[in-house]
Image 1: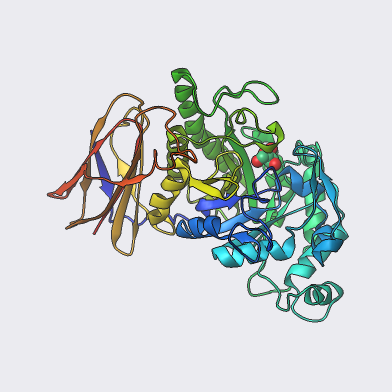
Image 2: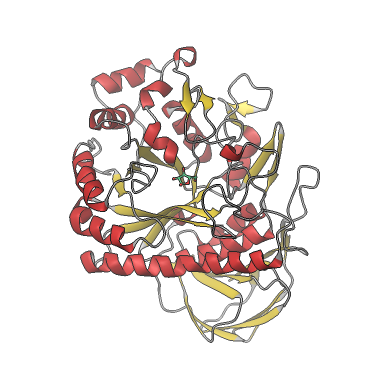
Length: 484
Ligand code: AHR
C-alpha cells in the first residue's frame, strides 16, 4: 500500500490545544490524582503531587479544562477561595454524593497550571449560578486594579491577576446542565456572555458556548444562527462506549472484553470523523471564514467502572485498545484542524480514559499517555495531506514542524500486520525519531504491580530510501516517525 505525502503544500496548523486535558471534581481525579494537599506524605509541591505533575509536564499539557463537566453547573466558586479551614463543605451530587471540601479551588487550579505550564479553560456555572456570580469570578481572576473581587483575591494571597484564556458558558445545557432547548440556551448564552468582563483588552477571553451532544445537528444549527456572532467557539461532546449503552446499563468492560467489542470500539472511534465533518458543515453555513472554532472538549473511552470501585467515580483501566482510540481520534482532529482548534480528553487522572492512574503513593502511565507523548511532535505543526487508497484498519496523519516531517500511523487490526509505504515529494536524509506502542493481547494494560506491559518503545520497522519510507506495522500498534 502506498500513500503519497504532499510535503510541499502547506496545510492548516494543528493547534497544540488539540492535546488538551479535562479534569473535573469527580472521584479520584483531582483529589488524590492531582492534588493531595500540602500535609500529605505523598511528595507534593503546594499540594500538587510531584510524580503526576512531572509525568504531565513531559507530555506538555497545553490546556486544562476545569472544574467540570456536570460539576461546573453546581459549583459556586466563592466556596473554594480563602482560608481552607473556613471553606464550605458541600455534597457532590453528580458524582457519588461524596463530600467536597473545596480545598481545591481557583487558587489551587492556577497553581496547578503554573506547575504544568498549561493555559486555563474555566467552565462557568450557568445551570445553577447567577450572572453576577459568573461576572465576579471573572473579575476575581482577571482584574488587575482596585475592585472588590480583585482586592479579595489579593487578601487571599494572589497579587497579580491570572490569565483566563478560555471560558465556557454552559456545560451539556441540553441535558444535565439544565435540560434546555437550543432556542432557550442560545438566548441565555447571549445574556450571560454579555457580562463577561474583558479587562485585558490585548488578549480577550475566548468565549465557548455549549455545543451539541454527539449527532444533535439541530443544536449546532440553532446555536450558530441565534448566538453565533457572540461566541468564539462551540463545544462538542462525544464518548466511545464499546456497547453504545448509556445510563446504568453494560457499557462494556475495560479489560477482558470480547473481540467483538474491539471492533465496535474502533467503529465508534471513527465516528468522530463523521460528527466533526457534519457539525463543521453546519457551522460553515453561518461562518464560512471559520472564525468560530469547534472545541471537542470532552472525548474518550467510557467503559464500565472497575469492579469494586464506586461507580460514581468512573475509574476504568486503560489498555492497548485505548491507545488505538486515542491515535485514531487525534488523527481525525488533525484532519479537521481548520475548525477543530481544541480538544480535551476526559479525564487526565483516575477518571475515564486517563493518562495516569494512581493508587495511594503509586502511579502508572497508561497506553493513552504514551500516544500523547509520541504525538507531541504534531503540536502546532502544519498538516501534510496524504493521497492513496484507503487501507483497511489503518489511520495515519502527517505534519511538518521546523522542516521535520512527522508521520504517525495506527494499525488497529487486531491480527494482521501491514506494510505501508509513504512516497515523499521532498528529500529527507535521516529518520531522527522512531517509536511504537504495541501489545500482544487486545486488553494488554499496565498495573501497579506490572507498570511497563504497554509502553513506548524504540521502533526499528521503518526504512528510508529514495524518497520513500516503508513501515512495517504490527497488529494493534501506533508508530510515530520523524524525518529530517
Ligand atoms: O466526563 C464525565 C461527564 O460526562 C461530564 O461531567 C459531563 O459533561 C459528561 O456527561
